[in-house]
Image (cartoon, rainbow, N blue to C red):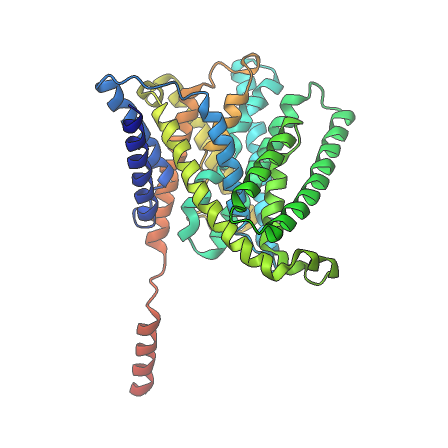
Amino acid sequence: MDITIIITFCVLLLIAYIFDLTSSKSKIPTVLLLLVLGWLVHELTNLIDITIPDFNPVLPVLGTIGLVLIVLEGSLELELNSSKTGIIRKSFIGASLHLFFLAFSLAFVFNYFGDYSFKTSLTNAIPFCVVSSAIAIPTVRYLKSSNKEFIIYESSLSDIMGVLFFNFITLNNNFDLKSFGMFGVQLLSITIISLVSIAVISFLLNRIEHHIKFVPIILLIMLIYAVTEKFHLPALIFILLFGLVLVNIELLKRFKWIEIFRPDELGQEVQRFKELVVEGTFLVRSLFFLLFGYLIETADVINVSTLKWSVGISFFIYVFRAVQLKISGLPMIPLLFIAPRGLITILLFLSITESQRILQIDRSLIIQVIVITAVMMTVGLMMDKKNRPITLPVTLKKTLAVKKRAHK
């Protein structure tokens, strides 16, 4: 049985790797293929009557680890300079507008039709308002640079602000000056903790001579995230800042004290560290969505009673997305369609207590919204492919230029 499980996981992860390799050609998000593959495995095990352990308790743990690695991978891609100011500003404004306006609009709908308290309605609305970096970042790597950077910044910021907003709403019974003051203290605390942690980890990254050094660093990052999250601090801010500082250490060279970190040598170590993070992220992300797909029941996907809600929520998502892009002056194609829901939506939904649950918001609704937004993203990527200008190889361009000059 043990050997069978090992064979199964190896085969599934190799298939996931093939999905990743071919996603640039097929334009189908890898996550959608992983969900389908996991579901097919579930149906197959039911068909041949194989008993499988209950994986439900594993899902939140795997999802949290995946979230940390995905945000870290995304932040390690972001090089900061004066030319990036505009895209960062647009990403922040876009993520903020989309999150808050959509959340309050959906909360009003839940409150009006379900007669729930506005706090309960808002708690259940927020998971639908976060753009999933777990799906968006791997999918857009083949887009042109400006669109790719916007999605990486926007989805990472959306994850962080979504978790912050969700925790603020769920952990406070009253929204007064005291609650906002405590929120400010939490932000200040995580900023100080982040800066100290980044300095210590950066020092260790460059000074450890042992042949095993990157795994302990990743474990330390996970530990800091888990401890700060335990105290309800916005831990994802630490992950984002850590990646940004590491990849942009060159910008700090003007300060003399930065020499203690050996920035030139650190840059080489960061590149190796980044490669390990990318590999680890692929593994954890693939396992998470395979497992989530395996836990999907067919009845959840084709549940007619929740379909009107999932279509309505998806409609709101793309209406607000269009308004957001219009305000930011960004292209509609393909960015309008790249607004997937995924890992954060699942994790936030699972963390809602039974007393705060809304009857209409169940597993079926979450799955349907994730599938609808993933399919819409596939459509957008295919439309982008059609509208993308044809680029000639460099050698062919030079040949044509020489012929043109000779003709003249």
